[in-house]
Length: 170
Image 1: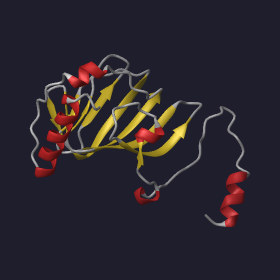
Image 2 (image 1 turned 30 degrees about the vertical axis):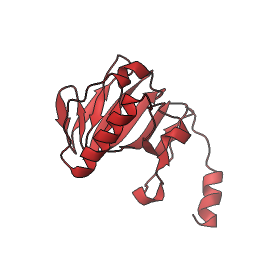
Image 3 (image 1 turned 45 degrees about the vertical axis):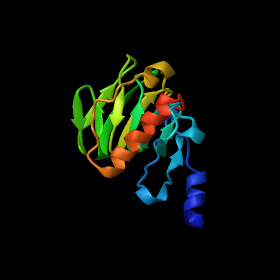
C-alpha cells in the first residue's frame, strides 16, 4: 500500500450506520491460510485451515474460505448463526449428497451434519452471527463414514481420521 493510500485509509470517515462499507478487491494469494486450531473461530476438531477475507463486527458477518483435509469429518453441530457455503474445490458430502465445485449449502441454528470430506475440500462461506460450532465429541467418535474416497490421498486421509477417532484423538 502506498503512503498516500495509507493516509486515505486512516482518514476514512466512519459510516453513519456503523457498518464497514470499505470496498475490497483481494487476490487469493494475499491472504495466508491459518490453522483454525490457533484462530479458534470455528471450534471444530483440529485440521481445518481458514482464510478470513472480511469481518464486520457490527453486522457480525464473517466471509472466509475454509479448507478441510482429506478424510476429515465435521461433526453434527449447531451454531448461533446462519451460513451460506459454496464448494470451490474437492468434495463435501452431506445430507445424502455428494457436492462438488459450484454446489451450495445453507444452514441455520438447527443441528446439521455430519459433513464428510473424503478427498478434502475447500469452500467459500459467509457466516452471519457467531460461527463457533457446538458439537459432541462422542457423536464424532461414533460416526460411521458413509462416503468412499476417490483418490489415494483421500483414502489415506480417511484411514488416518478413522485411527484418530478409534483412539479418541479428535
